[in-house]
Amino acid sequence: MAIKLLSETLINQIAAGEVIERPASAVKELVENAIDAGATRIEVATSGGGKSLIRVSDNGSGMEPADLELAIRRHCTSKISDTLDDIVSLGFRGEALPSIGSVAKLTISSRRVGSSEGAEIAVAGGRVTPVRPAAANPGTVVEVRDMFFATPARLKFLKSERAESAQITEVVKRMAVAFPKIRFTLSGTDRTTLDLPATGDDHLSRIAQVLGPEFRDNAILINAEREDVRLTGFAGIPTFNRGNSAHQYAFVNGRPIQDKLVLSAIRGAYAETVPAGRYPVAVLAISIDPALVDVNVHPAKSDVRFRDPGLVRGLIVGAIREALHREGDRASTAGAGGMLSAFRPGFRPAAAQSAPAYAAGRSSAPADWRADSSPFRPLGSATTASAGFAEVRQGQFADLAQPAARAEAPVDAGSPATASEPTRYPLGAARAQLHENYIIAQTDDGLVIVDQHAAHERLVFESMRKALVGRRLPSQALLIPEIVDLPEEDCDRLMMHAEGLDRLGLAIERFGPGAIAIRETPAMLGRMDAVGMVRQLADEIAEWDTSEGLSQRLEHVAATMACHGSVRSGRRLQVEEMNALLRQMEETPGSGQCNHGRPTFISLKLSDIERLFGRS
Image (cartoon, rainbow, N blue to C red; front, side, top):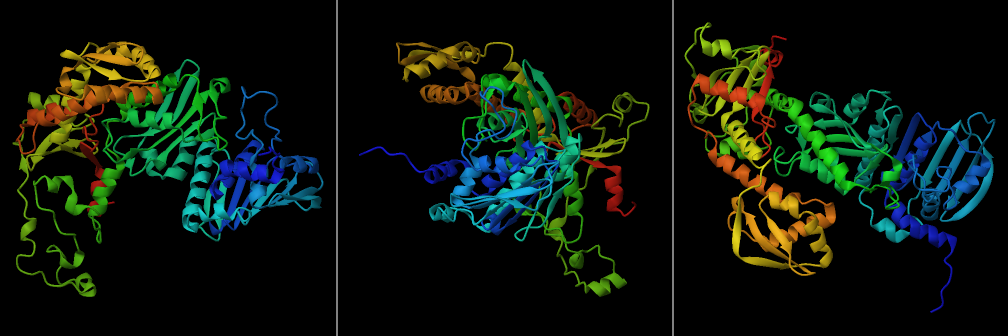
């Protein structure tokens, strides 16, 4: 078969398959162009989920008529010259505009700042209309209509208008977080208007605009540097988590990325502190010499490759853990907010029947509270009459009876117990124990409720975790070594990590060019599939260049042992024991959540309590 040169239109359509995956991809490329042009205001309008219309307007530097002719040609760009070692702009490949023009109807109107007139160029399905004069404000307006009309097969793979609109919103939010000095407006017939005013150097205010005001109260500042890499941003406390990873934002030199290495590092930093199926909230910005990172891995530019991935991963994990150790052991404001909302009329808990406290058999799950059936409703009042309250049937609330709180005997103010446990401590002084599991402590400005089992479980685990560090773990010698056949390159990578694995109790050695001999395994793991674990470690090292799987498995065993060795629910504690537990929690990193990631305590401010009684 003869080889022939493809047409320019077909080449652009092939490129569009990688660059413009969906309408949100086009929005990303156009917004990046606006940012590179120095815009301080960017407006995005859509219709039909971006399939019918995408319009991106900016007040950037604008383009001359000659620039418009080059802008719609492949590999024409103003952002790089002769090398890829110093990319400081978001765009640089020169593929986005010609790719969009090959599959949609594209119109670009622009006027350079200081110029007296503007110009316009149009491309539809690869066919170019010559540049012509046009009325335009300083800056650029790019309009895309009928996305993928020239490639109907791609159009069939798009999702619903609502789903595509949501993806565009996510793109704009990520760009807004990265560039707080720019005002972003997102509007259209298929959405409610999203307006994100510029916040200047106040990055946390912009993040709060996107992630919600609660993040401000539950965020910890991250500022760390190692060698030539700097990490800044904010990490949410472990108890402030979400049901998916959409609230994890990462940037490299201002470029939004969704890189597996970074997301894995965030997950590793929160190991044993966030419940299974929940995800931490974090916004991290990596500043690195452009020569040390490759952003040209994929046309979409969302993946990057670091020259030293281990350094970057270690910096992220270490910085987040240090921040959590410094000030992360505090209750999420969402916990107090949820408690307060539970007292409001009409509240219906989403998971009342499956809450862990009830599932454990400590009490019966109460029915949903309703004002018109409460035995404590005001009787004979105008409110009662207007609401049409029904009479309470005999015995209706018998199943809500609870054991009385066991308050400890008052201690003399001058006694050692009171003098050594004042309320000025972060977790306050113990005042009572409820249901033999919940400690009530008084602080200077409120109260704290502690789950004694969850808290002690965490303390025991941290104690065991320390035992895993600083010395070689006990190992169990195998009577007959296990032989694992692996590709030669996997064997090479495993042996590079042999010393670190040996400290964890796993002794391996080379057994020919394509095999590894397992001599010893960690005694802590007992009987185990050593061959399967080594194969898993080989895969992990090949992908991440780390061997943390074994360490995580050992920590999981320690967590299980801690759960069974901690103070059980139902055990009565003396005041001294409760206060000792509180003081140890204050000194232990990660004590704000148990080994399963659930909160160990909830804090209520006095102002919150006063609101419950209408005193504020």
